Length: 144
Image 1 (cartoon, rainbow, N blue to C red):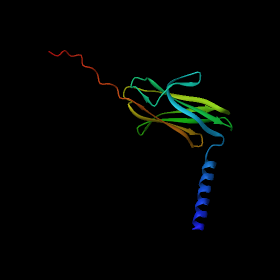
Image 2: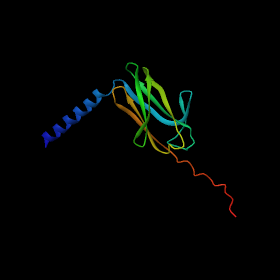
Image 3: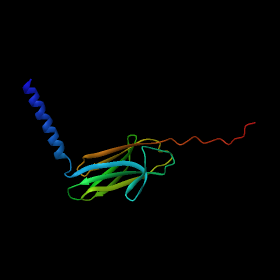
Image 4: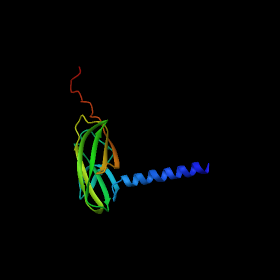
């Protein structure tokens, strides 16, 4: 029993160490949100549900970077299909704010995710949001 516990602790330590080594040094996600727009480098009207006529959605991230300047990628996925990818610069700062935006059309209803990925492939964070279906057209036909 003691051997099994020691082996389990050693395995856990190895996995944690391997994960730490795989992550890009110095990058940490501080904050993230989806919103209608950005003003003064801050999200405006953050939300996780948007109307069909929203026009565009912004994926905002605030990343602490104690290492060298680098890039992250934001991958916009609708259902199981990647619809857009943006490369974003991240400078050395305790809170580097950056974002990408994607145009949303009337046919883009449903579940979306935006995944922020470091240059080494480490996933820093994932945002989920939904676009509501467009309302059905109102009939203007006259009924007698």
